[in-house]
Image 1 (cartoon, rainbow, N blue to C red):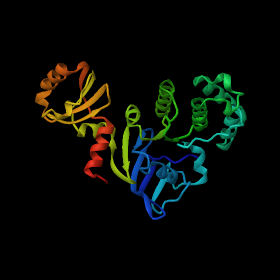
Image 2 (image 1 turned 90 degrees about the horizontal axis):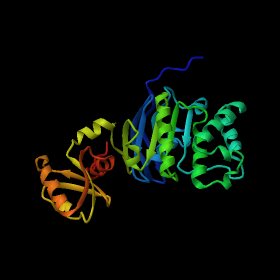
Image 3 (image 1 turned 180 degrees about the vertical axis):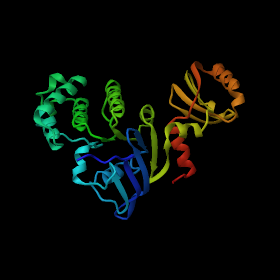
Length: 307
């Protein structure tokens, strides 16, 4: 039987969830388009994981509707979805290939297919020599990679990643990022849920920002950044930059120690900023830039912009 054609892989309409009288998710509406990466962003405790659990029918919404792959959620849809939870959990006494066999068979895969694909992916993650090792013998980062492999082994149409970079070093973050982009090119629809916005903005297509259970902003990444204009400077430096925030033509500064993002109130004073920075710092780079997602989120929350 041919599968239905759908425009949105996920459609959430006015989802609400309360726990013991406290509202964890407050009328969240959002769509995940086919073949896109949607960043669900916000601080810890914002309501991201609760929203994901409602999508997966782990918990039921108190109000609202959702559709998955063009239809209401059903058990038959589970094999078309991959889910990497924030709280990782593997059977520690099982060997790596046994874990992949178990997870693959739950998704309807044949044993021979699991072994073939599993070995390909273990090699891709530099884990080929660990096929017969128990999970408890692996480092935390290795176990994270095994769980990621088990999440995508069955070629899901929808992939939901809750803090996928947790516990990974920079090399493996790049490997996972590249694999996520490869899956997108194959048409997989991906939700990328994280509080680490600096990683997310490198690969996502659109954004839903959540704070205290409410959606505060959503839309295509390029459009959101364009809305805030190019009044931002990114500078790498050495020295004490505490004076920058007090410069009369500077609106705000996000200083990370050796790199800072500066919003200029008056672009005509850009050269003045360069001169002031050069006079008091060792300036390694200076470039006009779009605002970071972190900056946009902080501003939106301060504005109280729940939608």
